[in-house]
Length: 285
Image (tube, rainbow, N blue to C red; front, side, top):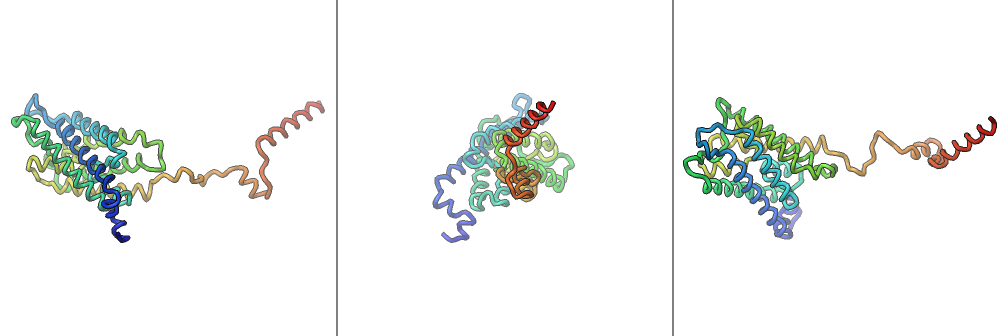
């Protein structure tokens, strides 16, 4: 396989097919669960179609779903569960293009399966649009794009921050931080755009409900925001390597050696010298 094939990731299909298959299955299941549980919170069985959406309930459902999913599959596929995250990782070279494309296909298929299961489990008289994302009252397409852009931006920005390889201490808290960021986005944007934040999530709902109004907003917005956030973080905010010396501090011994050409006295030598001086002062007294 040529150098170009390796760069775009064709080598993963031949040499690491087993590994990528597991990753694709993980992304499929992750989006299935996201649309089943998250979109399920958008349906009010007890009060029917006339019930006002409970924004806090919806935000928590999506946030907790992402928290659980990333905790479960993060070690297998990276826990993207979102084409915007995948696009950001591909734009910064964290994953290869072929893997990125396959991830997006698996994510969309999983989201469609999750919405299909939700439709099968829900009585027809209360199913409504099964959580389809749509622009709010008097919200224009451009405004919707702007909201979805920043939803994708904040999500990928946080993902890059908590998954920075030079910040190992943040790894344990990564699923919770990502889940809370999803919750944050939904608390803001449910009334604006339905708060997709995730093109695959919108695709799954739209496919099962056959509702495609303004659907481009839910792809262009989060993906553009995710790519912008990933590039900004990697090129402007990445943590320095943990083994790199700090430019602000230098060991005293090194400074002394540079200025005098002789090794700096050790802490033991300084301490003993002080004790001897104290002893001489006592004798003189």
